[in-house]
Image 1 (tube, rainbow, N blue to C red):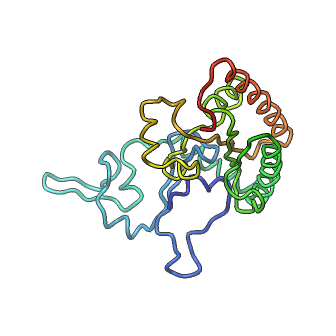
Image 2: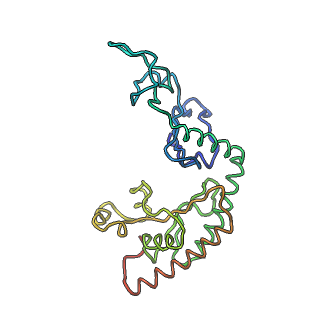
Image 3: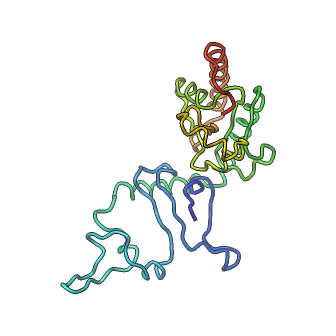
Length: 244
């Protein structure tokens, strides 16, 4: 299971209600949970990992080497060739400690409060679409994806960046799913290949951290309104395809 997008938001267990629901392997990236880049983890059964050859070879993964054979250490050592990323490991451990100290119930409650405020604020704007359930947001993490369909999402995201607001714009490594939500068939999607980033269909994604506040949501909504207005004015001078 790829857990990179959930580890900083919700408590999870690899043990299911039945053996069939157990998670055999769980992977996640450190930078998704406030830790330095370059780290991560694979959580799995040592007995299974020991049945396979190491993916990479280097110092620290063997007990002995002769001219004819080599004997590998048990996992996880056999999968950690070379010099370990000590700063990354220490940073990841500290990040996990902090998240546990804050508590995932508190994190979820905080995210729901910010989600509700942001979703309601965006939906008050003209031509706004918020993707996903906007009524029951209990299973949402701190992410809101939207479009203002009367302007181009690429240009709107660029305007937000001019105001110092970093968002993610595009298809979020889920092109076919995003294009289905946008109502763009595969045949039409191919037409955008030569259009460059500004012409490819997409959405805008805003995400929260445990440090964000309701005041920052208000500030974002104010900036979004300004950026939206500027995009509309520019369209009067130099029209471009809206709604993507």
